[in-house]
Image 1: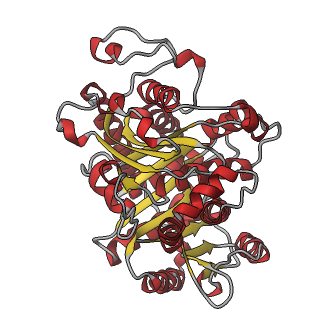
Image 2 (image 1 turned 45 degrees about the vertical axis):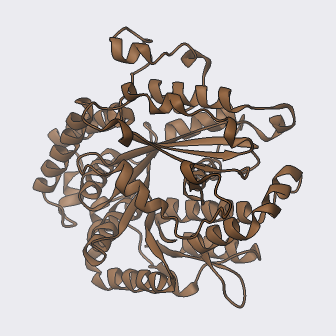
Length: 460
């Protein structure tokens, strides 16, 4: 099943490049030192690699082309990313699906959303999208990569999402959005975030939210990167996304002799399992392990330890493995006992666990099925979906990913809503939006939507 990706704005295009690199690295096993990985790849090569390639690329007489549309209101980033991909001599983008303009959106959501009155731009984008959809033998859905803080990624990305919903009403639309740094340089980023979130909530199947502050901490504290740049953060995101979206099979089918990945629709499962209730669409990815490159030769993991720590991260609403969470016990979740001053006990609607690596048979996932993790109005059998793949992923002999619809989002959304409302109450920078086609009523409606999201998740 094929996924068409839309890369929107500077962030979306730079992330898209890292994402497709990560996918192709996994398909072709370019980690030469990992002989175990190569050995397993050889036993499973046709089914897995064919399915992974079909999901994100298509073959041409020259380089494989990504199933992607590149979009920005400025040409520089699109041109740079296109050139980098082509110069790799491993893959490229379709030049007919690169949409660029000469004028940026200036971090103004209204300017990006209203496209400065340029309706031709939207038609160009949709023509390129249709071109990519027609290349798919089995179309699965859309993945939109975009930021929340800027103008093009957030504003134009929102407009594209709404247009996709109108033109492809039955398709799965997943938005991967990155929350800005809490002390970001864009002074109106809180406005942009609230406007984006509220509009996407009505059009998207689900929103995968990752936060720059937390991603930065993963880079510094776990990966030991001294001078963190956006390319480091994008690689962390790409690792998470590909870990979830690359081919895997249902746990019940792991012993099938065919091990056939044909027809697998991960987007359909995300929509049906994780986002079946339209009031709850916010998703998060946590994964384990996360270690620096220089530690691989000295590190050995077993499934018991990995899944125990991932389970504790889920309960504690933690974005990375830390020693302070090792004492967390599920019993406290249902007893109301205090857990830790820094910990918000996390309640889930549904979770999707993806396990990749050797000795899958030894992975005990029983803790993730515990009904106490989930809201009481969901059937016990509906809480957890599990997918597996016996192939090591991205240098890790064993790794686990949890795509979760839970209360993880409450503190972050609550904080940005308060800050944006304080600005709005003082009428700060409102004129910049009104002059580009957004009314005060649009702001009021967006605040109301954000407050309703907070209320809904708080009640879980």
